[in-house]
Each structure stands twice: as structure tokens, then as C-alpha cells.
Length: 571
Figure 1 (cartoon, helix red, strand yellow):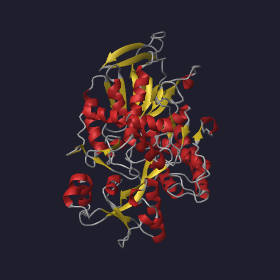
Figure 2 (tube, helix red, strand yellow):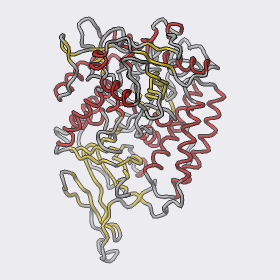
Figure 3 (spheres, helix red, strand yellow):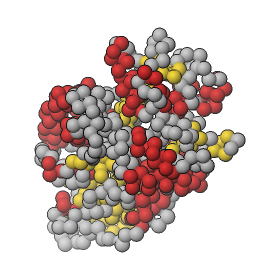
Figure 4 (cartoon, one colour):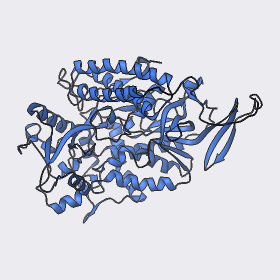
């Protein structure tokens, strides 16, 4: 375990003047600080009741619920507002209409998930959907209304209108509402521009009974590594879309929580199921801009460049088929015809309708010279959602006591082999609440003295071209070899390259000081390895995993579960 001096204040006192001085606990700005002299350095660790790594919907909703009675630290890689949750356009799926039913939502979820879903988890999440929405309404989220109450839209894979939304910027509206509350709460300490490096566990400390005690985190502004201790830790870091060259995800989606939990000893499951969103705007100036599922839900038609509609030839549900079906259909047509993109046409709808329901998509496209009221939108598939992740139970608990996971970083069993549209934010809310309920039921524990991060045997890197080169190479061959359609040979090629990169990156990590880019690259290559290993183990095509070598779906659905003992560790 690497350790370094976190926040230290030098003193001219003799080296042994403070020998035997016990660590002391202080209060500063509403947070506990454990301090002790080590040699000539005054070492400081931040201590809280709960540490939450990640500032999306799962992280912020958990923080607000916990902060009623506990001291909470919330780590955000950038600003609080920068998360995948804030990019979500469509909305949140929940049974809110009398014409809809819990069983129908469950059935749609399982059908989209290719019957790999955990039935108990699926029912648990969907039955708690209305309460989750009610909580957001209580927080002040301004969901779009109509004459019947709240407007509900329909998206691909849903048999009814059940997606509550805020126009076409639901994630932003939800995050904006919660962020203002988080910033004002006296019991929440926000550590912005901090990136978690690794979890602190009893196993690493040499304590017999394993438990998570917090995390080391790099302060991107000062370059210091801070020790953040906590009785309970929630991973809410989101997915790993940036492992691919083209993605709808923000730059923060680098698989950090999944990689950290894996290194700490947690099981990881179903990483082969990477959802590619069918409709990402195709334009050289439109980085990662998503065209919402709701555009197809409200009548959008997918067309070839000559105007021909093609989805009915691929699936009877046409544009309303689940995302994996639509993404493969687009991929097929593009490769067959040598196309750079296809087109999503909603121009037959009145301009007033489009302005009311899709104001942000309309405005962004207009900025790029595309008038969606008169012409179709050029679109391509892009990596969008990580359906697998850290294995958790219904209380969001991982394999390590004191460590929880919620949101896209987790694998709860809800999504199966393919996530149903707008179930992701619902999962964030329900499992964040589950984690909170379990934490509040626990008896308090005393934290052991946590060792500081030691950078005494590393130096500043002489050049960082290795990081940028490896980052680019990894994302390109993952796109080429581990994309929408896979073969065993392609996966093996990717695995060979990943093994070389792991050795190279770990050698760099062992000899040079950590940086933000290095931490993300280290996590990305671990996540890529987990994706490929899961994909090689699945000898069928199911949901988001389509293999030309195994095109049929097996009669029995089985999860792909990886355990650390089978992982070839490099350090």
C-alpha cells in the first residue's frame, strides 16, 4: 500500500520530542480532524461518520438523508454539478399513472434485461419508485406538468407512459435542486476537485476482521494526498463510459469506484453488458451530446441518408425497441452501407411541440446549424451505461463491511443484460436510501489510527506522454474490439493489449507521484480488463453482449461474477 504525507505541518522540534504523544481529535469547520506528530511532521486526517465518493444523484441524495443526524464528507472529482446524473435527459421511470402497474413495469424491465434480472431486486426497486419520486418533489424538483398533473412520457422498451421528467433536462434539474441543498447543509463537507485513489481497509492495515475505513484522495489543486477516515463509505462514482473512444458520458466516468472496490476485494459482476445509446449527435463540435430516448418515444423515426425508414426490418417494435436492439440495427446499417451516421427524424411534429418537450436538444442542434423542426438529426451509437459493477445486496452492501455502492458503479441485479430506459436514476434513489437505512441502523465504531500516504520512494514523472498515449490506445482498441458486436478473436486481442498496459501503468504508478490523469488511467485499464474477462466468459449472445461466435441465447440466464482471487495481481 502506498502512503504519503497528507496534510503535514513542519516543526523544528527535535525528532523524538513528541514520542509517545497519542493522536488527538479536534473539530474544525464542522468536521473531525485526527492529528498526531510523526517524526517532525504534524499529520492530519479528516474523519467523518460517512464518506461518500461521488457527487451524482446517488451520492447527493444519500448525503442529504444522512446529514440529518451524521457528519458526511462528499468527494467530487470536479464541481458538484459535474456528474453523469446531471447529463440525463429523458427522466425517471416509475408507476405514477392509474393505467399503469407495478407488474407491467417489472415485465418491461425483465424483457429489456434479457431475463437476467434479479426478480427480487427488480420488484424492490419498482415498488419503491413512487416514494422516490415523492422525495424529489419534496426537495423541490420542478417536474413538467400538464392538464392531468405531471406529464409522463414513454421511452423505448416501456409499454406505458411512466417517465416523469423536467422537459429534456431532467438530470440537470434534479442535480441543481439537490446541489443547492448539499452546499448549504452544515453537516456535509464537500471536497470538490478531489479524486479518490484507493480504499482504506482493515486487510491493508493488517487488522484481522476486514472493514472499510475510508479512502485516500488527491487534492487536485494542492497536489496533496488527504486521508479521509469514515465508519461507513458509499461508492457512488458512476460508470466507465470513458473506457470507450465514443461515449455520451462526462469525462469523470472512468470506472473509479469499480476499480477501487475490485482492488479492495469486492466481487464484480456482468461487466460485459455495456449499453451503447443508439442516438448520440453526430457532429465534430458536439462532444458527447445525447439525443434523448424520449425523441423516439414521442414519434421520432430513424432513417437512412436517402430517407428510408429501417427499424421495422430489424424489430417489430421499430424505434421503440430496447436500446440494444436499436443500437445493433444502426451499427448494422452503418457497416453494411459504409455510413458515417444515420438520421433521427422528428420534423413531422409541430415546432411548438418540439420547443416545449425538447428545448435543450432544439437549442443545441440550432447552435450547430441543425433545425430539428425542418430536418433530421445525424446520430451514431455511443457507449452510454455500465450495467455491471460492484456486487451489492438489497441494502447496497458490498462484500466488505462498512462499504456500500449505489448507482451505476453497482450491480444490483435490476438491469440484467440491458438497462431499460430511465431506470437508472430510479436505481440511484432507491439504493441510496437503502444504504442510508442500513447505516443508520448500525452501532457507532471507533476508527483505528489510519496510516498516511507515503510518497517517500517516488519522484515526479520525467515525462507524461506515457499516460496520454496509453489513455488513447486503450479507448481506441476497446471501441474496435469490445464494441457493439464482438468476436472471441477481437476480445483476445484486446485482452493481450490490456495485460501489457496494466504492467506498464503499474510500473509508472509505482515509481512516480500520483496525478489525476494517472489515477483515472489506472482505473480505466482495470475496468477494461474486467469488461473483457466477463465478455470472454459468456458463451452466448444476450442483451448488450452480442458475439458472432455465439449468436444464440442460452436457455438459462447466468450472471458473470469475478472474484479477486482469480485476478492476476501486478503488485
